[in-house]
Length: 407
View 1 (cartoon, rainbow, N blue to C red):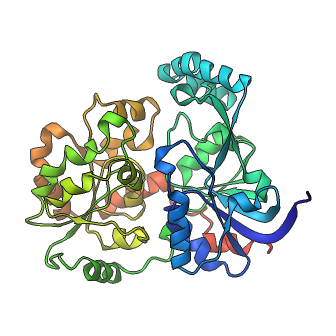
View 2 (view 1 turned 60 degrees about the vertical axis):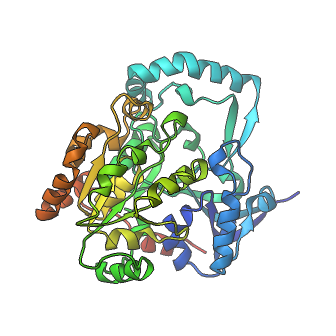
View 3 (view 1 turned 120 degrees about the vertical axis):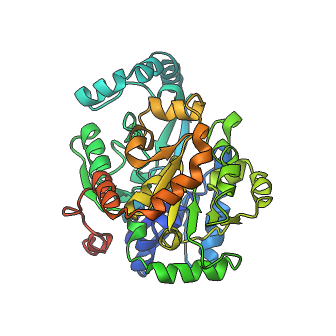
């Protein structure tokens, strides 16, 4: 069967939140845009039902789309944007051998930090996936459905040891990067790859803080307009025995902020999918809970006067938006913190630079928030923005990038 090539720009959507991340592309391309919904089946429980949610949102927004299963090996698009998170599983003797290697020698290379030396010398970590190695091989689909493939950045919460993942080496012609850090990490590992700094596209074309507050006040009528808004954005803790500990262990302390501040908490979609009962614990404390599936996060960040985060993408969203920020730490002995420390995640490596509070000092949370709120943080916020995203002289806006595509 011959493959039909269409001179169009396609977006491969794997997770519902990618619709928000790629909203600038969706909103600024007309009839030449094709949205492809990843409807593959995965073992990961957090992926169950994701295609249905993506489809519902697109139907509600009256956006046309195609299913990946219907077009793969049949249609190819001139340009394909993807986050590189769609894959097919292929099992073989060699993949099982690599799994055994990754969970023995590869894991030792990762834990001892030798992987960083290998990365700097050879551009590869030689961990074989380490403790995350699978018995099957993950095969990406980008080159099957796109002639020119462009990796879309999904956040700066990356591991300096493992980013970018080896699967991306030959899957993408261009890597879009948020700033200097991920740009240099890609170049270190994929030395010949073309990289372009684009900032955070989903935060382009922002509306004003006042307009954002008006939207949030209209939606959350229980908020007191005389109190500042704190947006609490906890990440997903993937270890079974620690799921939602970053919420449960801090709930009582954050609750004490309510006398002076409005608290809006937005739960990570993965946390909600595996632990929906956490909502009951939060509702007892009369927090405002943001469960809006189609939330434009730039509106929430613009409306917020203060961000409470812990790990993950919200840390860097707050930095990019130059917001006042405080990180809530998990216990140092937890599997989650050890995992992030071992892999040198950016949000763990530089916590002292950003500002954080430990659980044994949680009684000081209100005072710390008050102190940060009372001080002009514009110079510190500018410093953090430039450190993690560069000064911006060599950024290319998504608008300019899209206009350069020949469709």
